[in-house]
Image (cartoon, rainbow, N blue to C red; front, side, top):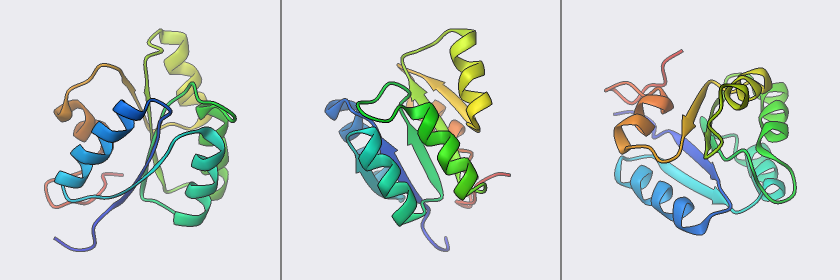
Length: 126
């Protein structure tokens, strides 16, 4: 496998953040994590991750605003909204903000990897 993909997890729930970070680390990703919207936005700008896992409801800047900002600055970054907000309207808001995928909590590790859009060779699907 070539270069490891860089994933930024932006999640305010410490348990969920730790589980995602650990799971992705085991799968060979290089993972960074942020506990709130402001830190997440700063890290997205400085780290230029390949993939951002982004909660919608965050302290400070919400996930939808972060998604819009990432989309403007780095249109090739894959953004996956990971949230407990599960209505069709919530999902439409996420897609309208520029999310590539919308993953409702709780989810399985296989659903997570599918939402990341990662092929068997470690490449991100277009």
